[in-house]
Image 1 (cartoon, rainbow, N blue to C red):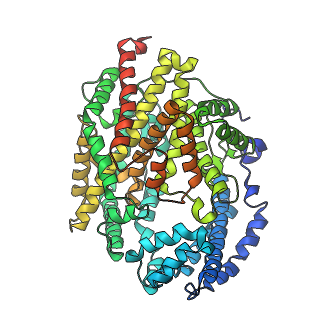
Image 2: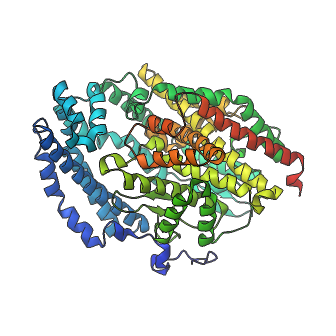
Image 3: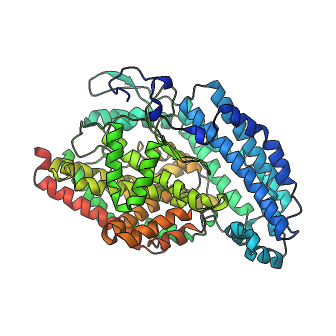
Length: 609
């Protein structure tokens, strides 16, 4: 166990082996990685050797697809291992070089396999239809059906090769913004709660936004905003270029809009997107209640943007040992059944988690892995309650992958991004409700803190991400109509959505530039999935809590289904129909219940004790 009172960040060799992840399940040694990397050219040759032969009958088609997916698994395994090793120590030249080599191999494979879709879709209708139903290709049935659905949007083999070559170039806006955002921007220094001058960073900004001292929040907000305002025209140019790239790509492939293209992969109607935005807009009275409670607790007449993240509950100084947190998480998700809890416990005992912060290690937390090996989780353990919830969150991702990989062949094991945040947030919601029933959750201050966490998370995910999604829709629609995406236009649009989704919070020249800080905008129409994911998770968790085994079994079947069907179909099988506004309404019901209890606790003087 690492001593959290240590002033120096430990090196990796100071960490107990049982507190590090076990990557030998992917490759036993770095030399084994090198051996497989050396085999990539042979895999490429085997896969591309079937070029021009996909119509030679089901046996050849099966051999071709097997060769292609063996190569894809090989490339994925190389890239995941290289990335995980780099994240152990980002200062390692060896690890960084290995990662760059893996990326090059991935790009080369993408270019070499660009023939697959156009060649399959060049087959006569009756030939492709026969391939979809033959037993020899049962593993690839969903893939072939999906390709048939894409027929109208896949170009000729020559055009597809050109598009594959330009895939790397199309990342220019995103990479330029990332370089500016992560390396070149400087936020200066501010005075902290103790009157000391400290250098502002993104991580510290997040902490300062939760400071109980309003002047500290104001100073941090002003310094952060100032950095983006200083580069506003450059960022507006990068943002506009990214949006126009999305629009051009959708037109090249014959989609009605960039939104249609973004949702096409998941076979999803644009009505799902619009239903989300409308449902959040309809909840304006609830949002106003929440903001009024915030005003009341903070003693403010007017809320500013820098007042929205500070917790209303008093800061808890309680800390948790990692092993203690594991037990809390396992107890908290007990509603998912003995099998789920037992499998996750075995994962914790089998070194799925890289627990502690070490020198050079990547910050934050995530779950990742590759088919054929157990999932792994990166943590940077500080012992806070937030860390306990983060552990539950990443464990949800890990178990989704664990069950999908166990039940599905490689081509259908990977689940779509649209479903990715559901399993993680189901765990968080269940953990919240479990803790509300413990001694900590029954004590008024502890209960208020847990409810505050749920409400803040709901607003930060469903409400904020809907606001960002609205902004994305406005910018892409404007670009599709030929509207220049100038700095003034972008600021104006963001100011309008802020006024809608955060009613009565100040909108001024410092708040309207907030769009410039969001890296997710460089991945078209991505952020709305955080909102639908949390709404779906709340619906599933409530059904598991209230209905028990039948709902739990449907949910576990959804996890095991991986990517074997489209996400709305898999969700509907689990009892959540996002083609209707009902799931968002149910989510807001839980939000209102938590908010109402917070209001009662404040009336009872919980914050005066």
